Length: 516
Image (tube, rainbow, N blue to C red; front, side, top):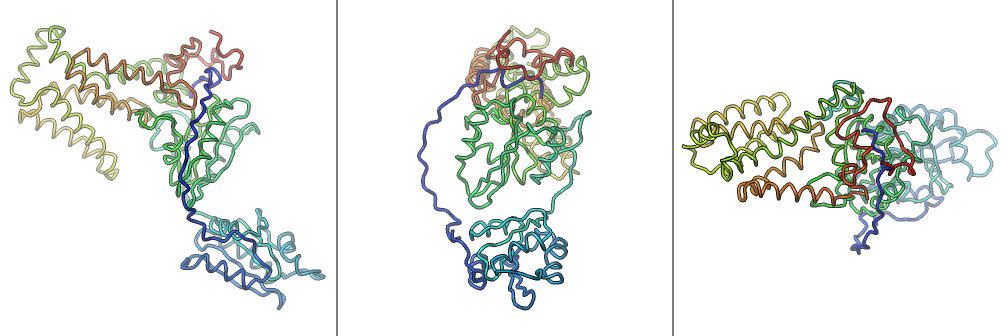
């Protein structure tokens, strides 16, 4: 959400290997891809066959002016009944067709322009398209003698109101969060960025769900290489259903076996707007309040929205505290194991004597003790998330206190282990984005194994392997550790510190991006 522009990094165009996909059978292949005829009875039979055993699909036959037959088809429960009554049925029943009607082929046009007062209407003749629009909340009007169907958008889905994001709490800033309704989310972004440069490209993914996905970006600021790569990967997704943005994230990410996220996700419109201003793009999925951001860097997950709403002195102090605690949460258990087991000469003698005395009655090696406590801590953390909100925090706190105290008194776990693991677990809570803490929590375990086997040498090897992986990771052609690796000195001002607003420069032109 800082001033880091994607144009400051050389985007590497990678040629994707052509992969052969199995030809999956089309599940919707039973829907005939043909145009409707002029006989309304035959059209009704075809559509009733398609919607057989669908009790929520309603067919209503009407006769206006005693001779013209009409057929109305809609889905009960996802349409606005008041609009149908006021804008469709009332004009047809009470107003009727205007006098002087010429040929029978013009009835649908007269209904569209003179009778049906719905904002979005269109004519469709393909049965597959008619079926799809009906299932999305449109009413279809078929006229006897007409080979086209008039579709009107009368959808009304039950959605929750705009609320504050529960996963990204800030002390200062907007209290708005995305919802499950696609157009609500796009309207929130359009209100923040009321410019025609804000582009929203729509596509459908999912053979059955036909989920609408919108790619948002700012024209002239977004990296075209990243945009084209995202378009290509989205078009290659072949799934029966997309139920949440996580389906898309896992389908288009570059390295599936990397513990680090290669796309960001957020519930906050202001975070997405800030990312768009930096040259990134967003992927909005209908039915999900989480919007994906691409591309992202490692440092973006460690920054909070508050960093850009508070004064820079407070922000810099908080940011440095955050970095220190994050590093402590990852390596402190491993350092404890390495020092006490392999390098006791590096520990002050009095402290080492105390630790040894407390561990004297423990039946397990230090590595096993730390593993047991780490697993217990992660279990309590997961329980606090999954349990009901009223008792989740209580069980987590009480469980940690009771289990830790009981384990120490029983001599199963030594007191220093409880202190080190608890301190590391609490330090991990300073990470502002919950998903950014996943890889750091996972990496604690291989580092424990290395430090418990080789001491500080193993810990150093583990850290080098992690850094090497981060350097090689380049989602969508953007280096994951930029602007540290590759080094862009002018952009370090938004990584280690945040400079005052008056000194910040945003959206640096491409020909100036690589100048130190």
